[in-house]
Length: 300
Image 1: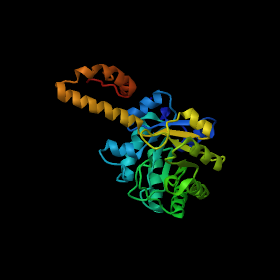
Image 2 (image 1 turned 30 degrees about the vertical axis):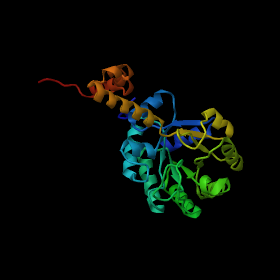
Image 3 (image 1 turned 45 degrees about the horizontal axis):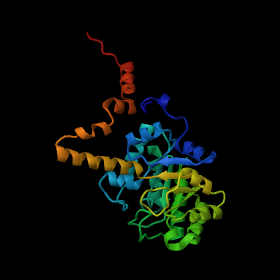
Image 4 (image 1 turned 45 degrees about the vertical axis):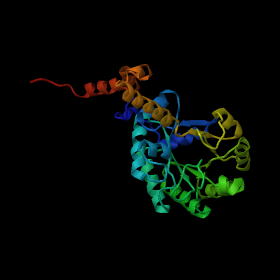
């Protein structure tokens, strides 16, 4: 499969395909993919949708996740991952990069780049990872205005409103915000940084029929739960946002240390993907075959 052939492209939009996934029974599992190669590997492992994390993009650029990214930075990664995998992507839209018009610009850019869904959070800048302390929230009506702006700008893009209110306003505040965001046009709710199974269960009970997303990030405030456990609690989506980057970063760290120590990476050869395996992953020979099928050199 290559994105160069129109016959290989999905007929439906990414938004329509994402919506179909969350409408059917069962929980949609979305691992983070921090580049095109990771996206292909996730797809080949059997996943039907992916998550693109602002934290993973920032870290891959050598930056902290503090709202430094631009719309164009993220759109570059959306295009790369959508082309490589052809899967619908839920994209981390941070705080929307500004106010209502900025949010609308983000939605149009992300949807045109190939996103299937976008998540917008109710923090203000400088925003932080949802599992850190000292987060500052926008007023509920200000966030609702952003959600409404996103709804008006989208064609098929699924709008997911994230609330970080549980830490500072408790579940009452988080649920009240979620209901307001749904009224403003959100398709689903992402209650961030819940700290117990009981909290996840209570949110689902207080928002019956609402499509809910759970964040299963490592080293955070949420207890380690499986996708099946989240489904039992009433959640329709679960993400592992930075896992692929964390594994890759550790492997790279060990590689550079070994080269520095030994002057060669030879000891790590058994842990490397071979050239043949890499070419199989990226469908190298499919591209060569396509090229040969189009142009044949004829000598005079």
